[in-house]
Image (tube, rainbow, N blue to C red):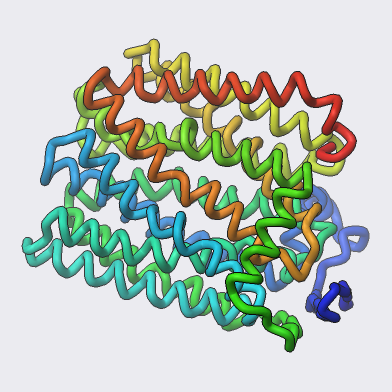
Amino acid sequence: MEKNFSSQNAEKYIISESQEINIGESPGWTKKFFSAFPALKHKNYRYYFLGQLVSLIGTWLQMVAQGWLVLELTHSAFMLGLVSALGLLPTLFFSLFGGVIVDRFPKKKILIFTQTLFMVLAFILGVLTVLKVINVTEIVILAFLLGIITALDMPARQAFAVEMVGKEDLASAIALNSGIFNGARVVGPGIAGIIIAVLGTGGAFILNAVSYIAVIIALYFIKTKKEIPQIHPHPLTSIKEGIIYSFSNSTIKTLLLFTAITSIFGWSYSTIMPIIVQNIYHLGAESLGFFYSAAGVGALVGVVLVSSFAKKINNLTFILGGNFLFCISILSFTFTTDIHLALIFLFFAGLGLIAELSTINTTIQHSVKDHLRGRVMSIYTLMFLGLTPLGSFQVGLIAEHFGSQIAIGSGSVVMLFFGVILFLEKNKIQTKIG
């Protein structure tokens, strides 16, 4: 079955859905499973799902190992935030150009290219660490290069979802994409703690490099086709068109700004988690994974809820409810020193954050015109990842001077404030976002 979408540039959008599973013909538990996760009906998405799951476990190995390595080298909360910020800074400057490329070239080929480069950088970092010649400067350089690639990879990844499953099952695909990331967060950090203890941080980086092979193979098996427009305006003209469209559309503008607030003041809590584990709970690297995993398990529950009820529950309910749950949970986390309560609060924080962000992503993608999808999702990438350095910088700076608990608690208060504003204005935008 093929679905065609036209645009002002006479672009034809062709989605291959060969071997799609018919839910009505599926027996018993299989029917219930595909009803809850309809994106998995599509063979292309199943390939992608499995490849990404393996790769993202490796990604979480590297994220945990890099944070721990920087802490070992510098013993500074500020440097931990600074390295994270510098690693994401390129998305602030290059993601808009990445969106132009995504709208001009096949997304599958772009993703194979970016995943291969990720693999090479992870291998270089691993070798330098194993040889004990690594320093913070080299970590920053490699992280900066990774950020440049991410500026192209992220909008391509976001826009590729609709080519695999179509708009009807897009909410499920986006929720499951978040589920892959957070499922890997459940497994990856726990494995990372063991690997760091046994093989060192270098071993974790090399295993991450190997894990990219899985998603590269999966991408080769995916069969989609998109006819690219023959008319290519100047890149700056294309960027301008995407920006004007995004911020003249009230729904997309509101959700992009809300994403920016979440990126700066919400997601940044994970940046200084190593400091919290070390200084508040007096635990080592082997325990750090449990804190990340608690939020990851909560996020998985959020994925199931969003994927199962996206067609039944108003989008704004998921966005506002997720925002409130995250903020209250993080505030509660800052006031406890009991590890069991801390893990429970992180569980609900993960649930709320994923419900908010995955629903924002879905709503934007349902609102955008197809020929502008790459550029709009590049702006989303800028808000989601490009502004993260500001969050990492501010949370590291506040933690350095006032403590890590105040740093993440103050951020959740800011998020809650903007959530209340959105709630008070909900009647004006209900019909557009809902």
